[in-house]
Length: 376
Ligand SMILES: [Fe+2]
Ligand SMILES: [Fe+2]
Image 1 (cartoon, rainbow, N blue to C red):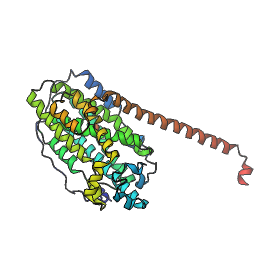
Image 2 (image 1 turned 60 degrees about the horizontal axis):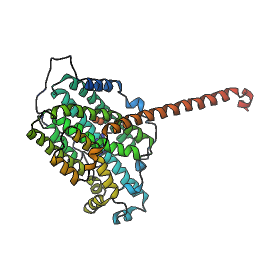
Image 3 (image 1 turned 90 degrees about the vertical axis):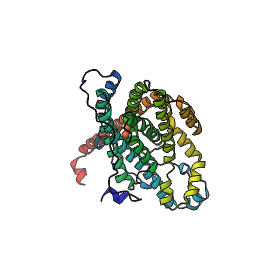
Image 4 (image 1 turned 60 degrees about the vertical axis):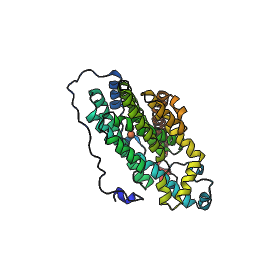
């Protein structure tokens, strides 16, 4: 069986080729690096993990209820379309499976994009400290893609092709010859949004397997966003106002693309729902509105921090109702992400010790039973 057998809508068999742009840069300066970037690089090396060992793949998952989220989180909940299916638990389960599959498939394709973008940063960024760091990130993203692929293949059992909005943003990001654009498109916009989506699902789900996966991936992503901020803050401080404006336009366009990405149009279409009606339901869904605004909780403060917070960006954020998000304390959020992954590790360790104690007690009790009573 290949992954193509699991795509619910056929995905292209040919590779998607984005023409290479810009130069591959070498530097002969092997000494001085920026302290904060080098310590981020050190952390990147220290914190590598392997899904084979760290994730409890034995945990069973119900493909119709992967995340255990309430029905109210489905955008068409309470509409006439919902009334038609709500009595049929199989149909509701199927819809939930498709929505989760769509969501995690976009995470998976995004992770592949992140791997390719960070590899491109290794090539194009002028300084060695940034090249070193981006090399660890390339490995991080490979591990994330591997993890999401396994989750989708083995547990969800269904995949969706890449969403056209995500594809368009990846295309814009990769086909620009300016070396800072993969940072801005990938590290700030795509990663920032993905991080917020991971965080929302991590906090909402009570299912241990997706919770582990999301928490561990987020532990790494916190470093990636920090990298983008560090590198771009320095660089953007030196740009002319025209150059800055070009970047701000890219941010505005990217944010609208990202916002539209989460409407899951393909799912409604694929399952035979009335697409127009479903899109209206998505627009009006209270849950979706909240989800959508929270998605910008990582992008908005980052964009402000790197100095791309001119009138165009502020107007766009106001239009999307997410201007307040620019005040979010990003450092505190990322510290929380790291602590939560450590906490899950600790809980797993405690559980393991307890299980070993129980097994030891049972083994001792068994060895205490006289042979006669065993044979009797
Ligand atoms: Fe990632
Ligand atoms: Fe990342």
